[in-house]
Length: 313
Ligand SMILES: [Zn+2]
Image (cartoon, rainbow, N blue to C red):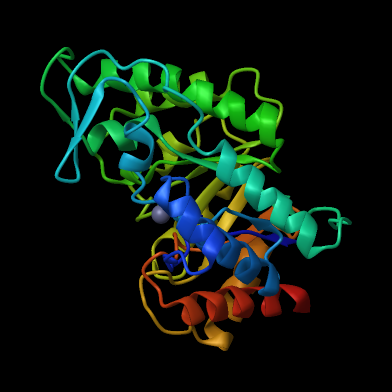
């Protein structure tokens, strides 16, 4: 049984304090987020997480991708689609992932244990497009989703070849809202998955009782859902696990929407129920969603609790 995170971690932006950083800052080369990545990585590893993220510390899940992709314009924090969506102007997350990978190696003095490592994460095409407003070029969101999938494929391929992550996760929270054309969303995931040699995961938060039949048809290796702050999904999985058999399930078992530590007993019971349904081999324990909004110590304690229970089984 392994553990992971959905992705985001509380950010602490560090002002340049020593001479070298101040000098770098003068030339615009100081990176205030580097320290946040280091803290996110160390915190996840200290808590016992097996497959970590780089903490997704650089901003919200839409603009941190759309700002590198021609066709989008960001104004006052909102993303607009203004022309044809084309390939990204450069790699978006590779540098941070390589830094996270280097930190993992450093943490284990060069001998990273089997099964531990870094995963790549991108925000999915359907979610980015449904969070944006079309102002010109596209007549409908579906065509924009397909063009964005082709654009994000460059990022996925770059992550695969340069980082060689444990797996790559696509975040598609909008798929549970009923707003998305599921056929187009699936086609977009197929574009991302083509020729990929590492496993592909899809994270969908929210309640899945209206969409699980559609979701089960997606060609991914790992499905990631929330089960802690949600009392519907566990029943859906219990009754329909046959639809997901053969896949791994990212099992959200601590509640990322409350900023206090989850109950040990309730979490333990939930995990045990998850193991009964999915089996130890195919279950991946993680929080329901990203932990960005939690205080840093609470985020750590939640991950620690999850891993303490994991080690019991
Ligand atoms: Zn989520």
